[in-house]
Amino acid sequence: MAAKKKISLVLADVDGTLVNEAKVLTPRAQRAVRALHEANIHFAITSGRPPRGMAMLFDALNLDTPIAGFNGGLFVARDLTILEERIVPVEVAREAVALIRDRGLDAWVYRGNEWLIAKPDAPHVAREAWTVKFEPKVVTDVAENLQRVAKIVGVSDDTKKMRRCEADAQTAFGSRASATRSQSYYLDVTNKDANKGAVVEYLAQHLGVKAEEIATIGDQPNDVLMFERSGFSIAMGNASDEVKAQASAVTDSYNDEGFAKAMERFILDTV
Image 1: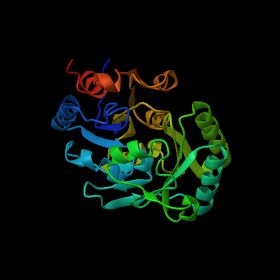
Image 2: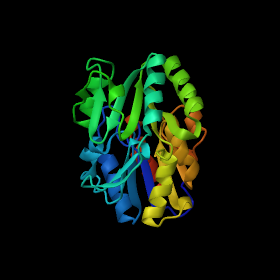
Image 3: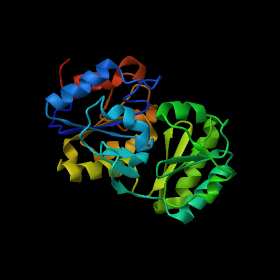
Image 4: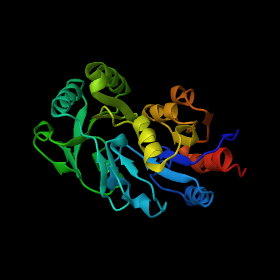
């Protein structure tokens, strides 16, 4: 069913949603965004990626809205000018790195435009560098570089370790920081006000749009926060049952044009 209400803004997650498994923005997805513009509906993106790691999308989507990187830890304009920055307090960053390591995960640190790692051959490093189109900086110890940190990431392909670390981080930090998985293998620790629910609030205020007129679309647990703050929410077909249960509607997988189909069916009502 369509949203059945006025939609003034669509806010989309990137990986697992806007782009497919190969990290490609398909022509049909581009056409869908162009159709939103033509219908006078704002379009914005948010991701755990650094803003620099989404730059390849700015022109392709003709973005004119603030871009929310690091799950809302950093808002930038299309030219990467910083609009607002929400950093992780040093003491929280220190605790986060220690907790991540104690649970057997690799720790990455994002600070400004830098991506800091200790092991260049660790899982997901090469793939992430290809995805964001820039290389990490290898340091002896990421825990020695915790000033003005935008995001700390725990990385592992062990699902049980990831779930345990996420739960432990949420318990340890409480209201001091946000800790949620942006992918099954990434746990993102950001400023307490840097989450996708806060992105909805920021865009609503910045663009003068009511929250009930915002539609959101995503696939991961950290997208549920923006589902809860928006008037209409769409889960991708590749999302877990838990995520799907929190959405207003469900579309097809990211490998089956799920994003474009959702725009056509639920927002533009063209099919």
